[in-house]
Length: 309
Image (cartoon, rainbow, N blue to C red):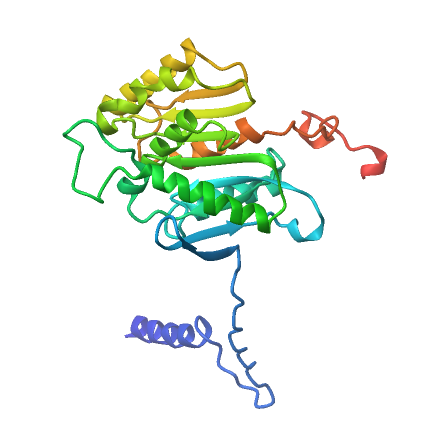
């Protein structure tokens, strides 16, 4: 009975002391709760709708500008993102450009996201192998999408923004196939080509098989090419191996290129973001700033100087 009385008393004490304290002073009032503040929208860019004559439809174009773009007259390189819709790859690639403004590891870039609607139709070239031929207009219109970018998207950007002479294009999977085609067939359209896990299986590797013929027509203007592949294997890797062999055999003098084999570290689903960061460092990398000798606290047993105490 005594034990139950003690437990009951402790319970009352906990209700009063462990939760909200009981106010026994009439002259003390509880603080009023503050209303929740209405948040401001976060704006990271501009989304445009281009009335495309080439595509015969309205098309979404998304643009991200470096943080200090409006504070001066500096000109910037442009990075065009294929599959660059708001629900596609625009945000994570523009985020990599924003990172450059923080760490200074590579140049700041204007990012232009070009949304795709029917990827196999817009990003794959016309097939010759009957296994890949489908009824119109499902596949094989990459030449029209190329025309759209060349005649409408690039002029829109260059007429409205301060750009320099560097123009890059990036994409993964079918977009990587499209960029490989641009590099081989339209080497003057961009200065930098970044193709991540390109879908060179398309049309039984036909584009890759034709790579030597296209490379033989390239001039010696300065260009960058970045290629990488994950663990896809099969005709994906087989097609890329043909392209790599063609470059080794007939590399234009002005071409600076890099291939990264990621088959043991990345899948088709995981490769894009990290590879894109590496590619931007390759094409637009800046020398590391010289911060001088390490501060005392980074040296074993280091001591602050009199001025640092």
